[in-house]
Amino acid sequence: MESKLSAQIREKNEKLSIDFMPAVIYGKGIESISLKIKKVDFDRVFAAAGESNLINLDFGSGAIKVLIKDLQRDVIKNTFIHVDFYQVNMKEKIKTEIPLHFIGVSKAVKELSGMLIKEMDAIEVECLPSDLIDHIDVDISVLNTFDDAIRISDLNLSVGLEIAHHQPEDMVASVIKPRIIVEEEKPIEEIAEGAEKSTEETKEDEKKGEDGDKK
Image (cartoon, rainbow, N blue to C red; front, side):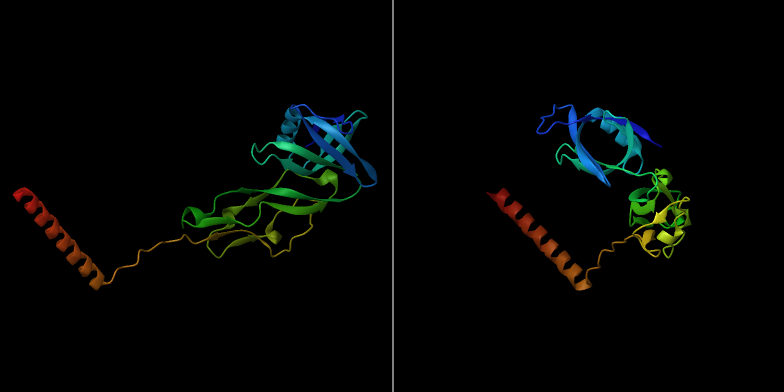
């Protein structure tokens, strides 16, 4: 899936209106260019493309294929305030992260009340830009007991994708036993002492009440 996004070249020291956000495009063997993009346009494209799909970026001289390489957010408003685009060469492999989508129902979670532990939510791959995909499905229905686990080597990768950083035995997901909090039983002596103290306090309260009535 490829999305289209329009941008404009940003002049040096140009102040942007509230409707625009700054951006930069760079790539292997090309000079970086400062851009400005309408925030609503970028939000729309990012919602569809994310960081693992190609974007057709046009800033005046025809669309070029790019990937989002870096995003900055406003820490308070959680809105995007800057984006870096990387221009790809369709004939050269790239490294990028592909999100993991966890699907299915785990028997260890549903019937044994276990807790699903996701060790990662994306994996780094190497591939040609044309082989990029939206996500990789991880079927947790194979997790039937607390001894079962899903590792990198268990993932079903589409043709053209190669694991770039992880090891085959790296954990992706597993299920752990539920935590059971058992209240520690108090010693019999402590229980008896508490009951005796409670009785004494009750008698003292009754005595105070009688003295009050006499007055």
